[in-house]
Length: 107
Ligand SMILES: NC(=O)c1ccc[n+]([C@@H]2O[C@H](COP(=O)([O-])OP(=O)(O)OC[C@H]3O[C@@H](n4cnc5c(N)ncnc54)[C@H](O)[C@@H]3O)[C@@H](O)[C@H]2O)c1
Image (cartoon, rainbow, N blue to C red):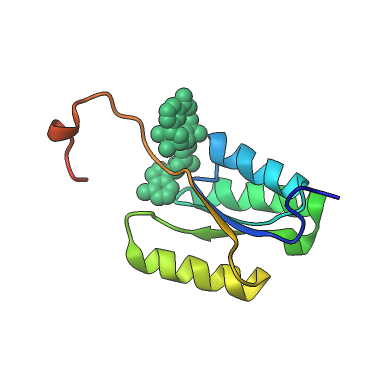
């Protein structure tokens, strides 16, 4: 029995790095994971790989740019439709910049 059996978890920035590893670990612990990112090719490939190991109904990829509110609504709708109510969110997406916050451009 896994620690996350039957749980539905949305993970942002899941196409690579920490988000990818979280998705793999959570799926291995029994969760159904919705992988979200802006790197569609990589994200879809990771979701396919997880689904191949854990089962077709256990992983999906959807494009979600965390700066776009409409993407959030669409991703949550996809998660609910595919897996049921969402239990958890790993809001991992981000970029690392070494300049001061006040001199960080909006884009
Ligand atoms: N790795 C570290 O040492 C470290 C240290 C401190 C904080 N963090 C934070 O942890 C998180 C993961 O780090 P990582 O090393 O795995 O980084 P990573 O760059 O390998 O992965 C980040 C993922 O987020 C995605 N992403 C970026 N902007 C996005 C957006 N607007 N919408 C959706 N997805 C977006 C990227 O496409 C990428 O797949 C980041 O938020 C990072 O800032 C990492």
